[in-house]
Image (cartoon, rainbow, N blue to C red; front, top):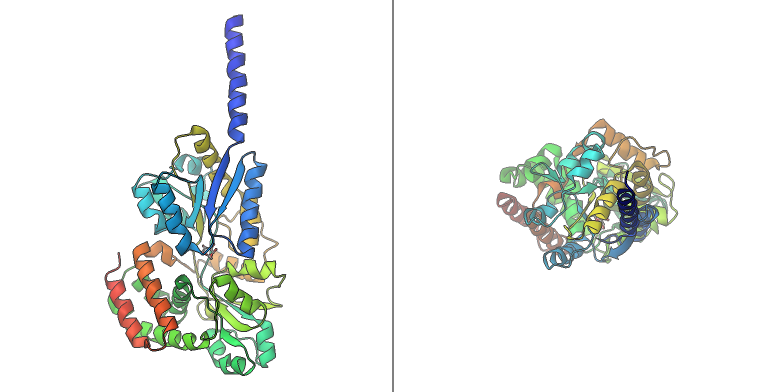
Length: 413
Ligand code: GAL
């Protein structure tokens, strides 16, 4: 090889090295709404892994929950001020951004990482895929279908810890007599809406839940099975009447301290019990499917990546997408988040009793798609608005609420 060529080759190698070194120093701003104690502990695991890989995670936490954070993220992306990556619930929330062509195609990462073989249930990857292209990296399975009970509250009230919804309802008078709030509920609309969805699966059953949420069947939404759900929701409203907190984790804290008997909330609540040093089965009891229908919905979170003109940023985005799905990150993140990993080939021996119950239900195949996978953001918002109004205004009867709900389902897209 001539000197000149050798020199050029050497220069090319050094410059390549310089580029890759420079590339490894890429800072990515990552936005999400994980601001509670448990959520922050979990996102710290993602940041630690990304920093250790040679890039830099610039945390962009947005307080106030998903309903506040998502519009902020969308306006930044469409306004030409995109972050490097952002968290959404996987499913239909990112539909319009994908249609607008502003999100990075991750198909090359998905294929290189065999995501179609390793991600389970495959519905998580399907929820990231539009027209054959992959646009998000799913990071967990969060299920709404849980209730969390304070063992202390029931001991103080002198009644056994309930094993199902009906026993919980029956224990409410004893809890109130002991000065406890039977049901903890925050004021953000997604909380009352989520709790209603859990009651629908438990009380109306999964067929009715799917008929309404997947098939948009107005007759079922207006029918007798859902009438039972609205009656139970009116009863739950009374049980939550003195739960004067805003954020979901403040409601979880009422259960952690024994001020409230229980909370219907997704399994992200586990992160709060963990940060509070409480042990599943000892300090708190979990009821998957309200102890009635042991089914999980496979909702959860995924990261999306706005397209970027800088190839170094794009390369770092793809590196982060691959890292999020890796076995090591899946274990470290999900154990702190209280969620289930998106792959089965990981060792979760550190999982607590409740997470182990969740894994067993997941492995049994008793799963449902989540509302964020079935309902458009517009329909979800209409239902959220109805539910928060109903849960806060006892003048709205179960029948009134059901009629309005059926009309929303009839017009759902
Ligand atoms: C959900 C999200 C969870 C959890 C929850 C409360 O939408 O999937 O990760 O953090 O919000 O913020």
